[in-house]
Image (cartoon, rainbow, N blue to C red; front, side, top):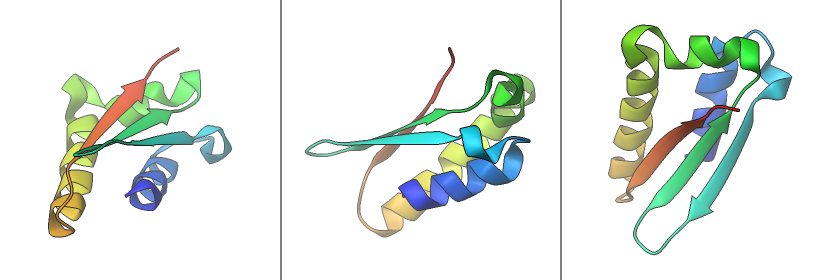
Length: 77
């Protein structure tokens, strides 16, 4: 899941080297946190959160296919 999220996020931003994905694995859920450069945060969230919701949908669908639950969070500084 982390690799998929990293691929999607890096494709959206102007500075892909600033993308950091942190993965926390719990008993029943995986939490993925996205950190990007300040100037790229709008590109990851999108108007009214549409891009963020699309990212979450794709990652959740991939996780469901593997029988896992995942949450994607966007961290702003």
